[in-house]
Image (spheres, rainbow, N blue to C red):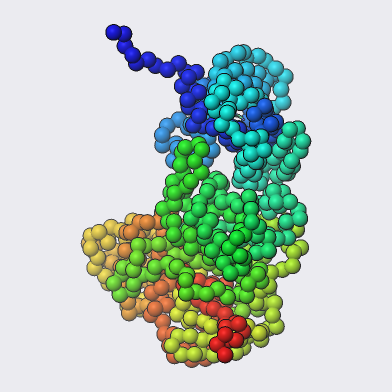
Length: 597
Ligand code: ADP
Ligand code: MG
């Protein structure tokens, strides 16, 4: 009996692999566009006919390929992007499996013209259904141009499963939008059946988003910009009135990569609760930036899911960012959200040095232009700073400015302590209740964070240095992180084996419980659910802020103490949340008063 096991010919293996990489015209578009971006293109043009079945044509002005590389590019597992498995984890490019071109060529008729800068003549490659037809020298512009004709012509079964032309077109357009939104610095053009559909010049994120939604929709966009210790969220969301029943413009990106998440989608939609009926949804374009160690990008080319190690904290941050943005815009009265159903991020228990629930990174949400405690100039300055970061075009600043408290008549002089750690204040016509302990915690955190950012720590030298005996484990941990402690303002010296002497601390560190604070900080270093130096330092700052605020007196403040605290709170940017995600203040609205009477 002859043996039954045979190796598949390459052409068959490629066809099978193709099913995974290219299951429809839109996935071809995705692969080709990402290759162009990876090649450093400044301008990418795409054209497709009959939903991509007849033709997908792409042209870029990227680095191009040498004749050898042009031929190699169509081999399976041929890639210039990684050399070893480790590279996958430090990946900055999109493709890396070296499968796309080989797979596409296995199921279509492909022609490519490519030329590198230092070559006079370009290279033409022709491949039909995985069969190499020829390689010639051709005159070609710098960069790469590829024609994919008659996709799936040799895989009738798959061809039959393609949806009608219009559906495939819609998929291609979404794929084009995703790539274009991820790279505002690259110019993109899209043609459908040779007619122009999008012309997106390179520009700012705002210009790119407007390019996608159209000029008419631009005034309905609100800018989101929030920085916390574990994630940065920026981008745009639609005003409540822009919500529609069928909405395609909902995009999430993490570290420059498009991804889908029903979980985070809910974080956004929930923030619009009570503002829009449940039957409609707003557009959004949100860009998250997190420590790359904190996410797991699925390496499968057709999967758009991303795993986050800090899921619920990121959920909180997105939700809060959207709420704040809506609040600042005047779409809803400032802080008129009910707090009862808010998920709170667990807090450190100062007595037991443990967290109440699995540890989450603190979420801090700032409202840079909401500051009743400083004068107009200061608030405007921080406002401008925050916005200039993402290079907004004139269009958005020409919109009516969001309604913020500092536009109201000045005269914030009526601060009244309520006792039990609360105060109320009248600002213009708005009445705000402040949790003084939380306000202090948020203020201390902001202060420490700013110091960490500037690299200028403040240290108060102790008259009588504190001695502490540590376990070998703790001593080792402290030694490993001595730079972080120093950056926060600690002056810690070794005093024999496993003993330390604390000669100085950051201001506002409670000296009575200094050892507890140090233990808490070591605990938070040990737990290791966060990564990256910045996140670690912020975590330490959060522990200190919490300890500092818990130790400080809040119950019976004198008028001067109250004023000093609120002034410092204002100077810190009037943070709306503590690092543990608790609100520092809330507005008491006329509505609420009416409801009570
Ligand atoms: P991958 O992108 O995973 O490396 P592909 O099959 O998509 O695999 O591409 C194979 C190789 O061909 C790439 O690694 C790259 O070197 C080269 N290549 C593909 N497209 C382009 C392009 N538009 N410009 C320059 N080089 C390209
Ligand atoms: Mg690729």
